[in-house]
Length: 103
Ligand SMILES: [Zn+2]
Image (cartoon, rainbow, N blue to C red; front, side, top):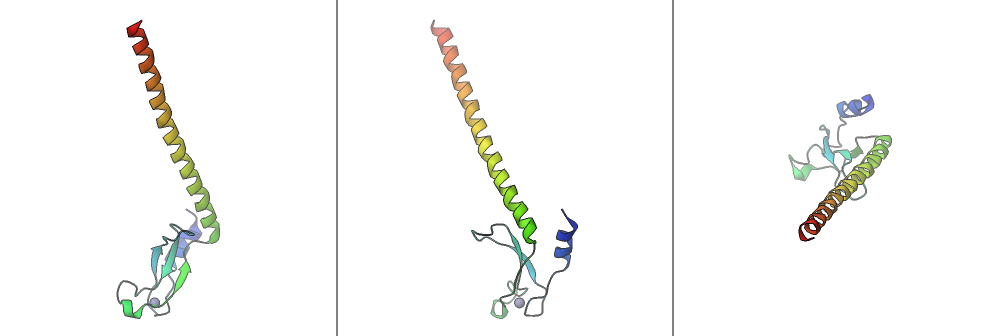
């Protein structure tokens, strides 16, 4: 990973409450898996939660993550296709074997 990422994690910003913010992972549809800084009181005292919000990763990294996710999906699709083709080859071998046994 790049040094800028390490720096951004080390420079944990303070939230509006004055406590250290906490790194969380977004589960929204637009930004799945993207990390952000949120209020440090979120887990400690839900009454005192402020609405502090700041992305951890710069946009460039997010772009790279989108490409990465697309590639991962492609690999997954191709793995499924390979599995299906293997089953088909096995099926064809079985058909040939049956033919050999019958004739
Ligand atoms: Zn706060």
